[in-house]
Amino acid sequence: MPLLRRAYELWRELEHSAGERLLIITGCVDAGPATGAIVSGSLQSCTTFQLPHEVLDHVALHRRFPGYQFPSEIVGVYQRDGGFLLSERCIVSYVVAAQSIGAEVHGRERVSEWKVERSHVLVRTQRADYLGARLIFTAGAWSSLLIPKLSPLAIPERQVMIWTQPLVPELFKLGVFPVFNMEGEEGRFYGFPIYGIPGFKIGKYHHLNQPVDDLNSLDRESYQSEDEDVLREGIRRYFPNANGPTLALKTCLFTNSPDEHFIIDSHADIPNVYVAAGFSGHGFKFCSVVGEIMADLALHGGTRHDISLFALNRFR
Image (cartoon, rainbow, N blue to C red; front, side, top):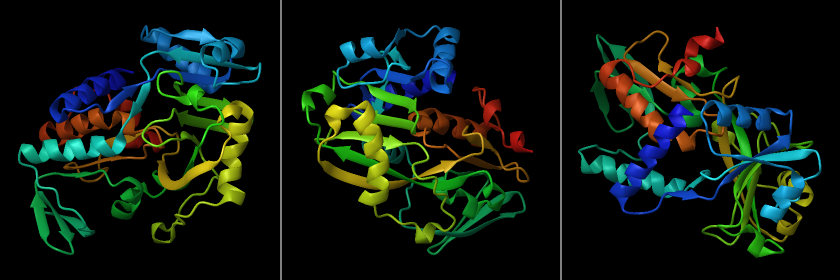
């Protein structure tokens, strides 16, 4: 929670710099059985950090947000300050902000190797060699290809999301439908109101449990008989008024650590190399503060933020 609070501050700073809205506040619902991991974890955070919240049973949830139709065993923790980020615009805004203070951004330049030379780090691409005092890796699903020791710790997984045309669109519009994170008998689903394109968006964590061993052979297609059916199961049961025609299916990647907490640390053997990886499908909201942490580490060798939870040595 301390990191999330700082992330909010930094997102607002970026919005001010960019002159556009990037963080959309919708409220959020963490839902599941009262004794389940999502609800109990959410309540613990709310209590520990004195976050405004309400606990709503399935009847109260439906009354407040009619798009939700949960069974009686599901309760929800509603927090008014939750929302979502416009991720593509956030990335563009950060690139523009970085360039404005002197950063060079090199696109389409694949790293072929890196190594330590004396007290510096050499990075070689197909275009040039770069020598620096310190190096930060934030390579996502490709992290273990660049740092082999991460192979068992940052594992790519195929993930699919669906956008549907709701049968009752007004129930899923911005302002009346909060983002959600919920666990049911079928697994754990997450989703968003209609925004940008005319569709209700939903995904399922660990979609088909498909680790990706070879990123070059990743299947980017999405299939009705497999991918869509998994997601429709959740829509039909929990959000039946969203169960209209398919507008889009999209395949992406999660990169999971064994405990699904982040990996943010210096390299185990090379102290002037730093890595942020294994964000396990819930890292983007934190990337504003993760950027600050990585800058702290590279410039000062430490950070004001408590990142002990994310240390590499926890997996020994």
